[in-house]
Length: 413
Ligand SMILES: Cc1cc2nc3c(=O)[nH]c(=O)nc-3n(C[C@H](O)[C@H](O)[C@H](O)COP(=O)(O)OP(=O)(O)OC[C@H]3O[C@@H](n4cnc5c(N)ncnc54)[C@H](O)[C@@H]3O)c2cc1C
Image (cartoon, rainbow, N blue to C red; front, top):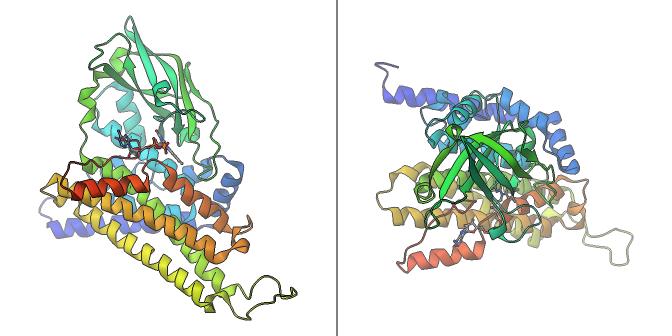
């Protein structure tokens, strides 16, 4: 690269990124890939073959792959890949986004043997990681969730169960973190390490079952007397883990908003196609036999499609613009409000497009024979996680009043 102009480097990077997005479209556009996504949704199982196809194509390690620079792929590329993937296979894209959160987290940690082993394998697209940091499935009380650990000689012994470990069925590693028993109550010691699936005491409960995003393998992960040498853990006061740059939180959040965008585009495309082919109302043999025209000629359907088109178009422009400007902010509070506005708009987009598709297509769009049924459930599964529309709206109001606000990631970070 010595002596190469920065615009030539940008061109090289742009070509590499374009080729990769094209490759993702090609992989997920293949009929067998799509069929596996449909089958995995029906079975409520992660499509391991779809994940392996993405590994083989050099996509799973993207965010830490040194080919894309010292900090892995740019967020612009991550968002494009996520959108293309979610258009066909939203469950795998959620699992991938959570794996990327694990990969990025490892990259920010100081070196210890398990961290280095997992990070190298992820960057080489050879291994996957999951992280379960939510209340276990079926639980309600966050006080009863999370891992704890105790010291035993040179080891830390981890116990506890946490939920929503997306990607766990394809993962070789699990991010683990727990407070150290007996440490300073005002600022407890927190231990972070990496579990290796297959070692005694690390259990995948294989219990994920949900209305949508059924093929994410977001299982409960349990540590039952899992012994890990202290030299293979990062142990530091809880307070030292809290500071995290908003732009890093935004990388995880905007991976998810790109999934909403891909799914919303899929719902929109289905609706446009459906309305051009759906003729009349009910059945022509009923007493109330209908207007004899295509749904696409009905003013109300045109209007509904116009609303969906507006949300989808503005959502895409806003997300792309926000991602492009992410590192240009001098004032953190201005950045926070822009991040929240983007998140709010894309959540509203998902709500409008999901319901718009259902209202326009009606009962014949709702049957399992048609893809809208899965797309709709996945859209709901996508936006149910974490942020709440009304809470974001209130936070925006507080920000507009000049009071301090924060932008949190899906896990509240
Ligand atoms: C398909 C799917 C896959 C998932 N995969 C994973 C995964 O791999 N790993 C994982 O750990 N979790 C995962 N989750 C869980 C997800 O990240 C959230 O943690 C979980 O959905 C939160 O549950 P909730 O909707 O009850 O949110 P709630 O607990 O009701 O709300 C969470 C939101 O509250 C906000 N919040 C947090 N703290 C505060 C505060 N002090 N004040 C105000 N607001 C606050 C944050 O914005 C956060 O987004 C997944 C969820 C789904 C649906």
